[in-house]
Image (cartoon, rainbow, N blue to C red; front, top):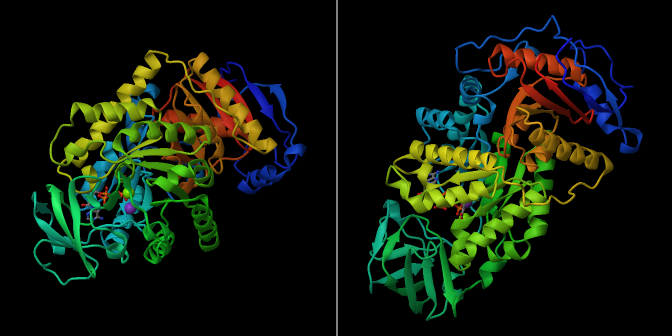
Length: 577
Ligand SMILES: Nc1ncnc2c1ncn2[C@@H]1O[C@H](COP(=O)(O)OP(=O)(O)O)[C@@H](O)[C@H]1O
Ligand SMILES: C=C(OP(=O)(O)O)C(=O)O
Ligand SMILES: [K+]
Ligand SMILES: [Mg+2]
């Protein structure tokens, strides 16, 4: 008999599921159970005890000491966990795991196999590909490298494709890495296309209506103010501008024009959020099986709904999550409906800061992070977190404070852009995010900072409400009983995300049958996702999990865990036997 502490079992009866603990349970039985109308799934509290370990269970020995791949054959006896988590748990125990997730934009500095592996080892949870840059062949090769890395080394790095969108930006500078605009210089911004090399003091603008929309006297800002020009003359497709704030022009830098103190959105406000080029990229992303698509310059919920139905029709079975980038004035106006429609959001502070006064960005960030948590959607804080580390090996104090604030707001994820895509110190930047996250999270727990945030009800169906209440109770119990971990057995990941939303003190181990759900859960706060074949027989699931994790040294006898299961909607508290 296992040393069951106590076992509260809020369980549905199991008329559809065989009661044996052998591995003959099929996911189908579980699926049938889930499909029972909520009203026919009575919940009752029963007390029972966890049984002893199943004698047939054999844990797969760790093949190479550190890195673990899932063997294809006998997969039902294996557990998919990444090497870094495993090593971390073994060395430092549960409390050491980082709860805040890390997204790295890949680029020339990090597209090689060795560099990718270094990022994965350094804690990258999600790799972002920005479709503004690079060609499709480059992106295809990089996605495949990430996938290979996952397969060969046991990582679960998810891939996020970020659309280009219809922002106004400069062209490529004819291949030059940058150009310097000096005070008083007259530059030509033109919608004409040029053969490289470009004429002197000339840049191409991607938006056809640019020369029509601007007026003499407007301010033209590059990257929200990296350099500033004043429009002095319009000559057909060419717009002559005088540099009023010197600065560096980078390839494809974003452009905004301002009149009377606010950003001008004339016809460009009518441009489609998803351009024809974006649709081709999205088809490419679906074909390559990306895990997330981040949509740039979202203006309304409609575009998110449209993309979601497109994905559902195009990619049967696979489930690509859609992330709304909040980076325009329209997205702020329609914030709540956009977030409700999406599977997550990104506070894209780069463009946001070019569209609204900079001093408004921090409070808006906080508002978006809070709203996402209320609505149970993962949220990423992005752009310029460690900007100085593009060039320098250590961050500024202000950058560390900014990262700390995002962690303190309990955002799901932090993102690196140029720091990892083309900076000199991608690994160091990632390690700063890692160590600052760990420190602030520890401080949260040590200070026992009581949650100021009252979570409002988020579920609508009865069944979801039950799951939500179970998760809230589990998180509360986990904190009060100081348990070592919460285990959640989840098919589609919903119960895992409801638990993550509660931001409990201990890590959440999320076990799922699906490798794609496992990768997707990697974006959410506090979740350590594992791939595990499980049935709707919790006793056997738990015993298998315990023996597999114990064999790897990831848990030990006596550890206190709370276990939840989304199919059974059950909750149990027990010591690891
Ligand atoms: N796929 C890529 N190929 C080449 N350079 C890239 C790529 N992705 C990103 N970069 C570089 O990293 C910088 C920062 O990335 P990101 O923040 O995603 O783009 P942006 O600056 O266009 O908003 C880019 O300006 C670009 O110089
Ligand atoms: C993340 C952002 O988007 P992108 O890098 O695609 O401009 C941003 O604007 O902050
Ligand atoms: K983009
Ligand atoms: Mg942007």
